[in-house]
Image (cartoon, rainbow, N blue to C red):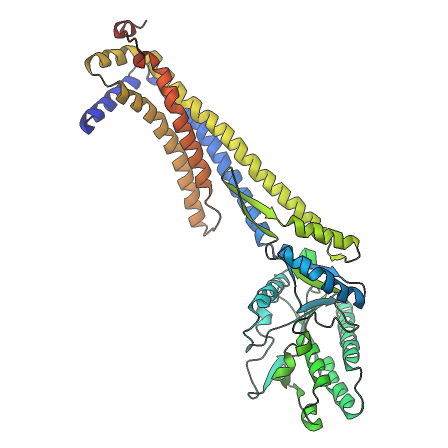
Length: 482
Protein backbone atom coordinates (compact mmCIF):
# COMPACT_ATOMS: atom_id res chain seq x y z
CA UNK A 1 0.00 0.00 0.00
CA UNK A 2 1.45 3.41 -0.96
CA UNK A 3 2.39 5.66 1.93
CA UNK A 4 0.02 8.37 0.68
CA UNK A 5 -2.99 6.01 0.81
CA UNK A 6 -1.98 4.81 4.28
CA UNK A 7 -1.68 8.41 5.45
CA UNK A 8 -5.18 9.17 4.17
CA UNK A 9 -6.57 6.05 5.85
CA UNK A 10 -4.89 7.06 9.11
CA UNK A 11 -6.43 10.53 8.96
CA UNK A 12 -9.88 9.01 8.33
CA UNK A 13 -9.51 6.69 11.33
CA UNK A 14 -8.42 9.58 13.56
CA UNK A 15 -11.38 11.66 12.42
CA UNK A 16 -13.70 8.81 13.28
CA UNK A 17 -12.16 8.43 16.74
CA UNK A 18 -12.38 12.14 17.47
CA UNK A 19 -15.81 12.78 16.01
CA UNK A 20 -18.20 14.77 18.16
CA UNK A 21 -20.29 11.83 19.43
CA UNK A 22 -17.27 9.81 20.67
CA UNK A 23 -14.70 12.49 21.48
CA UNK A 24 -15.41 12.92 25.22
CA UNK A 25 -15.61 9.24 26.00
CA UNK A 26 -12.54 8.40 23.93
CA UNK A 27 -10.42 11.23 25.34
CA UNK A 28 -11.44 10.29 28.90
CA UNK A 29 -10.57 6.65 28.28
CA UNK A 30 -7.18 7.44 26.78
CA UNK A 31 -6.32 10.03 29.43
CA UNK A 32 -7.25 7.68 32.29
CA UNK A 33 -5.13 4.79 31.07
CA UNK A 34 -2.19 7.00 30.11
CA UNK A 35 -2.28 8.59 33.57
CA UNK A 36 -2.25 5.16 35.24
CA UNK A 37 0.63 4.03 33.05
CA UNK A 38 2.57 7.26 33.65
CA UNK A 39 2.01 7.08 37.42
CA UNK A 40 3.12 3.43 37.54
CA UNK A 41 6.22 4.11 35.44
CA UNK A 42 7.10 7.21 37.46
CA UNK A 43 6.75 5.33 40.75
CA UNK A 44 8.96 2.56 39.40
CA UNK A 45 11.62 5.03 38.26
CA UNK A 46 11.68 6.77 41.65
CA UNK A 47 11.98 3.49 43.56
CA UNK A 48 14.60 2.32 41.09
CA UNK A 49 16.59 5.51 41.64
CA UNK A 50 16.44 5.16 45.42
CA UNK A 51 17.44 1.50 45.35
CA UNK A 52 20.23 2.21 42.88
CA UNK A 53 21.73 4.88 45.15
CA UNK A 54 21.62 2.49 48.12
CA UNK A 55 23.15 -0.26 46.01
CA UNK A 56 26.02 1.92 44.77
CA UNK A 57 26.69 3.24 48.27
CA UNK A 58 26.95 -0.29 49.58
CA UNK A 59 29.14 -1.48 46.70
CA UNK A 60 31.46 1.50 47.21
CA UNK A 61 31.70 1.07 50.99
CA UNK A 62 35.36 0.20 51.55
CA UNK A 63 34.72 -1.06 55.08
CA UNK A 64 33.03 -4.14 53.61
CA UNK A 65 36.12 -5.06 51.59
CA UNK A 66 38.46 -5.62 54.52
CA UNK A 67 38.05 -7.61 57.74
CA UNK A 68 40.41 -7.69 60.70
CA UNK A 69 40.79 -11.12 62.34
CA UNK A 70 42.30 -11.65 65.76
CA UNK A 71 44.98 -14.13 66.73
CA UNK A 72 45.22 -14.78 70.47
CA UNK A 73 48.84 -15.90 70.63
CA UNK A 74 51.91 -15.93 68.44
CA UNK A 75 51.37 -19.65 67.86
CA UNK A 76 47.78 -18.94 66.75
CA UNK A 77 49.07 -16.40 64.27
CA UNK A 78 51.53 -18.85 62.71
CA UNK A 79 48.93 -21.63 62.74
CA UNK A 80 46.39 -19.39 61.03
CA UNK A 81 48.78 -18.54 58.23
CA UNK A 82 49.70 -22.17 57.62
CA UNK A 83 46.17 -23.59 57.83
CA UNK A 84 43.79 -20.90 56.62
CA UNK A 85 45.62 -18.53 54.26
CA UNK A 86 45.15 -20.83 51.27
CA UNK A 87 41.49 -21.45 52.10
CA UNK A 88 40.84 -17.72 52.36
CA UNK A 89 42.52 -17.26 48.99
CA UNK A 90 40.15 -19.83 47.44
CA UNK A 91 37.26 -17.56 48.46
CA UNK A 92 38.68 -14.59 46.52
CA UNK A 93 40.34 -12.91 49.51
CA UNK A 94 43.88 -12.62 50.78
CA UNK A 95 45.71 -11.71 53.94
CA UNK A 96 47.25 -8.26 53.75
CA UNK A 97 50.73 -8.57 55.19
CA UNK A 98 51.66 -4.89 55.47
CA UNK A 99 49.31 -3.80 58.25
CA UNK A 100 48.35 -4.91 61.74
CA UNK A 101 46.44 -3.67 64.77
CA UNK A 102 48.39 -3.71 68.03
CA UNK A 103 46.96 -2.23 71.25
CA UNK A 104 44.10 -0.61 69.25
CA UNK A 105 46.65 1.23 67.10
CA UNK A 106 47.04 0.56 63.40
CA UNK A 107 50.59 0.04 62.17
CA UNK A 108 50.58 0.30 58.39
CA UNK A 109 53.21 0.28 55.68
CA UNK A 110 53.74 3.45 53.67
CA UNK A 111 55.32 3.08 50.26
CA UNK A 112 58.42 5.19 49.63
CA UNK A 113 58.19 7.33 46.49
CA UNK A 114 60.76 5.25 44.62
CA UNK A 115 58.96 1.92 45.20
CA UNK A 116 56.75 1.02 42.24
CA UNK A 117 56.46 -2.71 42.87
CA UNK A 118 53.73 -4.83 44.48
CA UNK A 119 50.81 -3.29 42.63
CA UNK A 120 48.37 -5.79 44.13
CA UNK A 121 49.40 -4.93 47.68
CA UNK A 122 49.38 -1.24 46.83
CA UNK A 123 45.74 -1.51 45.77
CA UNK A 124 44.81 -3.11 49.10
CA UNK A 125 46.83 -0.55 51.06
CA UNK A 126 45.24 2.30 49.13
CA UNK A 127 41.88 0.94 50.25
CA UNK A 128 43.05 1.05 53.87
CA UNK A 129 44.38 4.59 53.35
CA UNK A 130 40.95 5.65 52.12
CA UNK A 131 39.20 3.71 54.85
CA UNK A 132 41.15 5.49 57.57
CA UNK A 133 41.11 8.86 55.76
CA UNK A 134 44.90 9.00 55.40
CA UNK A 135 45.10 8.92 51.62
CA UNK A 136 46.17 12.57 51.53
CA UNK A 137 48.77 12.34 54.27
CA UNK A 138 50.16 9.04 52.94
CA UNK A 139 51.61 10.93 49.98
CA UNK A 140 53.42 13.30 52.36
CA UNK A 141 54.92 10.82 54.80
CA UNK A 142 58.20 11.09 52.94
CA UNK A 143 59.63 14.56 52.46
CA UNK A 144 60.46 15.75 48.95
CA UNK A 145 63.53 17.53 50.33
CA UNK A 146 66.12 14.77 49.86
CA UNK A 147 69.47 15.15 51.68
CA UNK A 148 71.26 13.05 49.04
CA UNK A 149 70.77 10.02 46.81
CA UNK A 150 71.25 7.40 49.51
CA UNK A 151 69.17 9.02 52.27
CA UNK A 152 65.49 9.90 52.63
CA UNK A 153 63.47 11.96 55.08
CA UNK A 154 60.43 10.55 56.78
CA UNK A 155 58.19 12.80 58.84
CA UNK A 156 58.30 12.03 62.55
CA UNK A 157 54.53 11.87 62.82
CA UNK A 158 51.70 9.54 63.66
CA UNK A 159 48.03 10.22 62.91
CA UNK A 160 45.19 10.51 65.36
CA UNK A 161 42.20 8.59 64.02
CA UNK A 162 39.37 9.40 66.44
CA UNK A 163 40.73 11.92 68.91
CA UNK A 164 39.21 15.12 67.57
CA UNK A 165 36.77 15.58 70.46
CA UNK A 166 38.91 14.13 73.23
CA UNK A 167 40.24 16.20 76.10
CA UNK A 168 43.88 17.26 76.28
CA UNK A 169 44.52 14.90 79.16
CA UNK A 170 43.30 11.89 77.16
CA UNK A 171 45.35 12.96 74.13
CA UNK A 172 48.48 13.26 76.30
CA UNK A 173 47.74 9.86 77.81
CA UNK A 174 47.44 8.38 74.32
CA UNK A 175 50.73 9.92 73.29
CA UNK A 176 52.51 8.46 76.32
CA UNK A 177 50.97 5.06 75.56
CA UNK A 178 52.21 5.18 71.97
CA UNK A 179 55.75 6.14 72.93
CA UNK A 180 55.70 3.41 75.55
CA UNK A 181 54.50 0.86 72.96
CA UNK A 182 57.20 1.95 70.52
CA UNK A 183 59.79 1.60 73.27
CA UNK A 184 58.53 -1.91 74.09
CA UNK A 185 58.47 -2.89 70.42
CA UNK A 186 62.00 -1.61 69.92
CA UNK A 187 63.07 -3.56 73.00
CA UNK A 188 61.57 -6.76 71.54
CA UNK A 189 63.29 -6.19 68.20
CA UNK A 190 66.59 -5.38 69.93
CA UNK A 191 66.85 -8.79 71.61
CA UNK A 192 70.25 -10.36 71.01
CA UNK A 193 72.19 -7.13 70.64
CA UNK A 194 74.97 -6.21 73.03
CA UNK A 195 77.84 -3.85 73.45
CA UNK A 196 78.31 -0.81 71.27
CA UNK A 197 75.69 -1.77 68.73
CA UNK A 198 73.06 -1.98 71.47
CA UNK A 199 74.00 1.55 72.58
CA UNK A 200 73.61 2.83 69.03
CA UNK A 201 70.28 1.01 68.70
CA UNK A 202 69.03 2.65 71.90
CA UNK A 203 70.20 6.04 70.63
CA UNK A 204 68.31 5.60 67.36
CA UNK A 205 65.27 4.32 69.26
CA UNK A 206 65.29 7.50 71.34
CA UNK A 207 65.68 9.61 68.21
CA UNK A 208 62.42 8.20 66.85
CA UNK A 209 60.37 7.75 70.01
CA UNK A 210 61.27 11.06 71.66
CA UNK A 211 60.56 13.16 68.57
CA UNK A 212 57.46 11.56 67.12
CA UNK A 213 54.54 14.01 66.94
CA UNK A 214 50.77 13.67 66.86
CA UNK A 215 48.99 14.92 63.73
CA UNK A 216 45.23 15.33 63.63
CA UNK A 217 43.39 14.32 60.49
CA UNK A 218 40.88 16.43 58.62
CA UNK A 219 37.96 17.04 61.03
CA UNK A 220 35.53 16.80 58.09
CA UNK A 221 36.40 13.10 57.72
CA UNK A 222 34.74 11.31 60.59
CA UNK A 223 36.11 7.90 61.62
CA UNK A 224 34.45 4.97 59.93
CA UNK A 225 31.99 3.54 62.50
CA UNK A 226 33.23 0.01 61.84
CA UNK A 227 36.79 1.04 62.73
CA UNK A 228 36.22 3.67 65.39
CA UNK A 229 38.06 1.57 67.98
CA UNK A 230 41.33 2.27 66.20
CA UNK A 231 42.90 5.15 68.10
CA UNK A 232 45.98 6.15 66.11
CA UNK A 233 47.78 5.20 62.91
CA UNK A 234 51.55 4.76 62.97
CA UNK A 235 53.83 4.30 59.94
CA UNK A 236 55.26 0.79 60.02
CA UNK A 237 58.44 2.23 58.50
CA UNK A 238 59.65 3.26 61.95
CA UNK A 239 59.62 -0.40 62.94
CA UNK A 240 61.55 -1.24 59.78
CA UNK A 241 64.27 1.18 60.87
CA UNK A 242 64.62 -0.69 64.18
CA UNK A 243 64.81 -3.99 62.32
CA UNK A 244 67.40 -2.84 59.79
CA UNK A 245 69.60 -1.19 62.42
CA UNK A 246 69.56 -4.38 64.44
CA UNK A 247 70.48 -6.62 61.49
CA UNK A 248 72.91 -4.27 59.72
CA UNK A 249 76.32 -5.79 60.41
CA UNK A 250 77.95 -4.45 57.25
CA UNK A 251 77.97 -0.81 58.40
CA UNK A 252 80.68 0.32 60.79
CA UNK A 253 79.81 1.81 64.16
CA UNK A 254 80.32 5.46 63.18
CA UNK A 255 78.16 5.26 60.04
CA UNK A 256 75.50 3.26 61.86
CA UNK A 257 75.23 5.98 64.50
CA UNK A 258 74.68 8.54 61.72
CA UNK A 259 72.22 6.39 59.76
CA UNK A 260 69.16 7.83 61.53
CA UNK A 261 69.08 11.51 62.52
CA UNK A 262 66.39 13.92 63.66
CA UNK A 263 66.10 17.17 61.69
CA UNK A 264 64.69 20.49 62.78
CA UNK A 265 61.79 20.23 60.30
CA UNK A 266 60.18 17.49 62.46
CA UNK A 267 61.54 14.83 60.15
CA UNK A 268 63.95 11.95 60.50
CA UNK A 269 66.68 11.31 57.97
CA UNK A 270 67.36 7.64 57.34
CA UNK A 271 69.21 5.44 54.91
CA UNK A 272 66.83 4.58 52.05
CA UNK A 273 66.95 0.79 52.59
CA UNK A 274 65.99 1.25 56.23
CA UNK A 275 62.45 2.43 55.51
CA UNK A 276 61.63 -0.56 53.29
CA UNK A 277 60.19 -3.90 54.38
CA UNK A 278 62.92 -6.14 55.86
CA UNK A 279 63.78 -9.04 53.59
CA UNK A 280 62.68 -11.69 56.08
CA UNK A 281 59.11 -10.30 56.00
CA UNK A 282 58.69 -9.89 52.26
CA UNK A 283 56.69 -13.12 51.93
CA UNK A 284 55.27 -13.50 55.39
CA UNK A 285 53.23 -11.56 57.91
CA UNK A 286 55.09 -8.69 59.52
CA UNK A 287 56.40 -9.49 63.00
CA UNK A 288 54.54 -12.77 63.31
CA UNK A 289 57.73 -14.27 64.80
CA UNK A 290 57.97 -11.81 67.71
CA UNK A 291 55.91 -10.90 70.73
CA UNK A 292 54.42 -8.02 68.76
CA UNK A 293 52.67 -10.47 66.46
CA UNK A 294 49.56 -8.97 64.82
CA UNK A 295 46.74 -9.06 67.35
CA UNK A 296 44.52 -8.25 64.38
CA UNK A 297 45.57 -8.63 60.77
CA UNK A 298 43.54 -7.54 57.74
CA UNK A 299 41.87 -9.88 55.26
CA UNK A 300 41.35 -8.08 51.96
CA UNK A 301 38.23 -9.18 50.04
CA UNK A 302 37.85 -6.95 46.96
CA UNK A 303 35.00 -9.04 45.53
CA UNK A 304 32.98 -9.41 48.71
CA UNK A 305 30.23 -7.37 47.05
CA UNK A 306 29.67 -7.13 43.32
CA UNK A 307 26.79 -6.49 40.92
CA UNK A 308 24.82 -9.51 39.73
CA UNK A 309 22.43 -9.82 36.81
CA UNK A 310 19.01 -11.29 37.44
CA UNK A 311 16.93 -13.04 34.80
CA UNK A 312 14.27 -10.32 35.22
CA UNK A 313 16.71 -7.81 33.69
CA UNK A 314 17.89 -5.96 36.76
CA UNK A 315 21.08 -5.79 38.78
CA UNK A 316 21.19 -6.60 42.45
CA UNK A 317 24.09 -7.33 44.83
CA UNK A 318 25.93 -10.62 45.11
CA UNK A 319 27.58 -11.17 48.48
CA UNK A 320 30.46 -13.54 49.15
CA UNK A 321 28.49 -15.79 51.48
CA UNK A 322 31.13 -18.54 51.37
CA UNK A 323 33.79 -16.21 52.74
CA UNK A 324 31.46 -14.77 55.39
CA UNK A 325 30.44 -18.23 56.54
CA UNK A 326 34.10 -19.24 56.69
CA UNK A 327 34.91 -16.14 58.76
CA UNK A 328 31.98 -16.97 61.06
CA UNK A 329 33.43 -20.44 61.62
CA UNK A 330 36.82 -18.89 62.38
CA UNK A 331 35.12 -16.55 64.82
CA UNK A 332 33.81 -19.44 66.85
CA UNK A 333 37.27 -21.02 66.84
CA UNK A 334 38.72 -17.98 68.58
CA UNK A 335 39.85 -15.87 65.60
CA UNK A 336 37.56 -13.03 66.58
CA UNK A 337 36.71 -10.32 64.13
CA UNK A 338 37.43 -6.68 64.78
CA UNK A 339 33.93 -5.13 64.67
CA UNK A 340 32.19 -8.48 64.33
CA UNK A 341 28.79 -6.82 63.96
CA UNK A 342 29.94 -5.52 60.57
CA UNK A 343 29.40 -8.91 58.92
CA UNK A 344 25.85 -9.14 60.29
CA UNK A 345 25.06 -5.58 59.20
CA UNK A 346 26.43 -6.39 55.76
CA UNK A 347 24.15 -9.41 55.35
CA UNK A 348 21.10 -7.46 56.50
CA UNK A 349 21.82 -4.53 54.17
CA UNK A 350 22.37 -6.73 51.14
CA UNK A 351 19.18 -8.68 51.79
CA UNK A 352 17.12 -5.52 52.28
CA UNK A 353 18.42 -3.83 49.12
CA UNK A 354 17.95 -6.98 47.03
CA UNK A 355 14.41 -7.41 48.36
CA UNK A 356 13.58 -3.80 47.52
CA UNK A 357 14.96 -4.14 44.00
CA UNK A 358 13.16 -7.42 43.35
CA UNK A 359 9.80 -6.29 44.75
CA UNK A 360 9.98 -3.04 42.77
CA UNK A 361 10.57 -4.88 39.50
CA UNK A 362 7.95 -7.57 40.14
CA UNK A 363 5.34 -4.96 41.02
CA UNK A 364 6.25 -2.89 37.97
CA UNK A 365 6.18 -5.83 35.57
CA UNK A 366 2.81 -7.10 36.78
CA UNK A 367 1.17 -3.68 36.92
CA UNK A 368 2.66 -2.27 33.75
CA UNK A 369 1.93 -5.34 31.67
CA UNK A 370 -1.64 -5.42 32.97
CA UNK A 371 -2.18 -1.76 32.11
CA UNK A 372 -0.25 -2.12 28.85
CA UNK A 373 -2.55 -4.91 27.67
CA UNK A 374 -5.86 -3.70 29.08
CA UNK A 375 -5.38 -0.14 27.79
CA UNK A 376 -5.04 -1.01 24.08
CA UNK A 377 -7.72 -3.69 24.47
CA UNK A 378 -10.18 -1.05 25.70
CA UNK A 379 -9.19 1.27 22.85
CA UNK A 380 -9.82 -1.45 20.25
CA UNK A 381 -13.06 -2.53 21.89
CA UNK A 382 -14.19 1.09 22.07
CA UNK A 383 -13.35 1.59 18.41
CA UNK A 384 -15.25 -1.54 17.36
CA UNK A 385 -18.36 -0.78 19.42
CA UNK A 386 -18.66 2.88 18.51
CA UNK A 387 -17.14 2.89 15.03
CA UNK A 388 -18.15 -0.41 13.44
CA UNK A 389 -20.73 1.38 11.27
CA UNK A 390 -18.13 3.77 9.87
CA UNK A 391 -15.49 1.05 9.54
CA UNK A 392 -17.86 -1.26 7.62
CA UNK A 393 -18.89 1.63 5.37
CA UNK A 394 -15.26 2.48 4.74
CA UNK A 395 -14.41 -1.18 4.23
CA UNK A 396 -17.10 -1.53 1.55
CA UNK A 397 -15.34 1.07 -0.58
CA UNK A 398 -11.71 0.28 0.28
CA UNK A 399 -10.59 -3.23 1.15
CA UNK A 400 -8.01 -2.08 3.73
CA UNK A 401 -8.90 -4.08 6.82
CA UNK A 402 -5.26 -5.03 7.52
CA UNK A 403 -4.20 -1.42 7.39
CA UNK A 404 -7.09 -0.37 9.62
CA UNK A 405 -6.23 -3.10 12.16
CA UNK A 406 -2.62 -1.95 12.10
CA UNK A 407 -3.73 1.63 12.73
CA UNK A 408 -5.87 0.65 15.74
CA UNK A 409 -2.91 -1.43 17.01
CA UNK A 410 -0.40 1.33 16.37
CA UNK A 411 -2.27 4.18 18.12
CA UNK A 412 -2.23 2.63 21.65
CA UNK A 413 1.33 1.40 21.13
CA UNK A 414 2.50 4.90 20.21
CA UNK A 415 0.70 6.27 23.28
CA UNK A 416 2.57 3.81 25.52
CA UNK A 417 5.83 4.70 23.82
CA UNK A 418 5.25 8.42 24.38
CA UNK A 419 4.51 7.93 28.08
CA UNK A 420 7.46 5.63 28.82
CA UNK A 421 9.85 7.45 26.51
CA UNK A 422 9.01 10.79 28.13
CA UNK A 423 9.54 9.51 31.67
CA UNK A 424 12.75 7.71 30.69
CA UNK A 425 14.11 10.76 28.87
CA UNK A 426 13.38 12.95 31.87
CA UNK A 427 15.15 10.49 34.20
CA UNK A 428 18.24 10.23 32.00
CA UNK A 429 18.34 14.02 31.66
CA UNK A 430 18.23 14.26 35.45
CA UNK A 431 21.18 11.85 35.74
CA UNK A 432 23.19 13.90 33.27
CA UNK A 433 22.38 17.18 35.05
CA UNK A 434 23.49 15.69 38.39
CA UNK A 435 26.67 14.19 36.89
CA UNK A 436 25.44 10.88 38.22
CA UNK A 437 26.94 7.57 37.16
CA UNK A 438 23.97 5.51 38.27
CA UNK A 439 22.97 2.52 36.22
CA UNK A 440 20.86 3.13 33.13
CA UNK A 441 19.70 -0.51 33.00
CA UNK A 442 16.22 0.85 33.65
CA UNK A 443 15.97 1.10 29.85
CA UNK A 444 15.83 -2.71 29.66
CA UNK A 445 12.86 -3.17 31.99
CA UNK A 446 10.84 -0.35 30.41
CA UNK A 447 11.63 -1.65 26.93
CA UNK A 448 10.74 -5.21 27.91
CA UNK A 449 7.26 -4.32 29.17
CA UNK A 450 6.65 -2.14 26.12
CA UNK A 451 7.64 -4.91 23.68
CA UNK A 452 5.71 -7.63 25.53
CA UNK A 453 2.57 -5.48 25.78
CA UNK A 454 2.80 -4.54 22.09
CA UNK A 455 3.17 -8.18 21.01
CA UNK A 456 0.43 -9.41 23.33
CA UNK A 457 -1.93 -6.71 22.10
CA UNK A 458 -1.63 -7.77 18.45
CA UNK A 459 -3.85 -10.89 18.66
CA UNK A 460 -6.15 -9.11 21.12
CA UNK A 461 -6.63 -6.32 18.61
CA UNK A 462 -7.51 -8.82 15.88
CA UNK A 463 -9.97 -10.52 18.23
CA UNK A 464 -11.73 -7.20 18.88
CA UNK A 465 -12.26 -6.79 15.14
CA UNK A 466 -12.87 -10.50 14.42
CA UNK A 467 -16.19 -9.73 12.72
CA UNK A 468 -14.18 -7.95 10.02
CA UNK A 469 -11.61 -10.71 9.69
CA UNK A 470 -13.73 -13.86 9.95
CA UNK A 471 -14.64 -16.25 7.14
CA UNK A 472 -18.17 -14.85 7.01
CA UNK A 473 -18.33 -11.10 6.68
CA UNK A 474 -21.69 -9.28 6.60
CA UNK A 475 -20.80 -5.65 6.09
CA UNK A 476 -24.43 -4.67 5.67
CA UNK A 477 -25.35 -5.96 9.10
CA UNK A 478 -22.31 -4.30 10.67
CA UNK A 479 -23.11 -1.06 8.89
CA UNK A 480 -26.64 -1.13 10.37
CA UNK A 481 -25.10 -1.65 13.80
CA UNK A 482 -26.27 -5.28 14.25
